[in-house]
Image 1 (cartoon, helix red, strand yellow):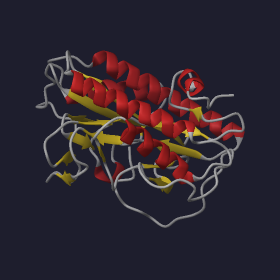
Image 2: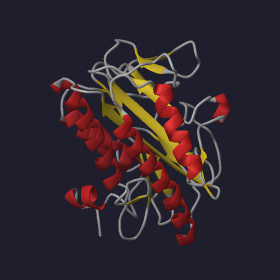
Image 3: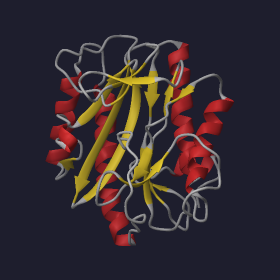
Length: 275
């Protein structure tokens, strides 16, 4: 889940000890497994409220607490954003998934006071080649951003890696005003991580820093608007959007993706970013 579009002043970036990173891995693994369960559950005819109930039951039955539920008044365990909805879609028993839809599912969990946060975008039945390409580009942009999260890099190297990859793939809208964030004892911590920008700026990355990285990419323009529910953000042109997110820790051995089941080793190895 992104930082709700608000830039805040706050303390220095939280540095975690190895033991604290292990606790974050426990939270991240619970989020990753919950998202895999939801991926398997997505099918025509299911409602976004059904998916929300599955997520809450899985998190609570594995000794976790949903991060999102009650956060600034958000009423659900997941954000379920369908088609032109970019982020913060509120699950509803009236929102029935249909063939050709795409749904972004954003999920967070707390384990022993530590947070994990991740998102996937999933096709519902057969989708168009254009939609499939959007999902592929957005997910690969996430991995390019994660691969840039090395010790000694600068924060905006992550942003630049995301933008550069998306720009190399065609004419897509990279959403602005929403982005990744620090994470640890709170879900949203400093700093904000934009999905665009020049490299070489911001804090130098150190072992023990943890961030959630989350590109949001539109088939059309980058323009967005918020619906009257005060949460759901949509594309202004009605074209579809995709959103992928992982939480990772900066380590001496390279990025460690805490919400990926394999800690991201396979994908990062392809990009030359694993130890």
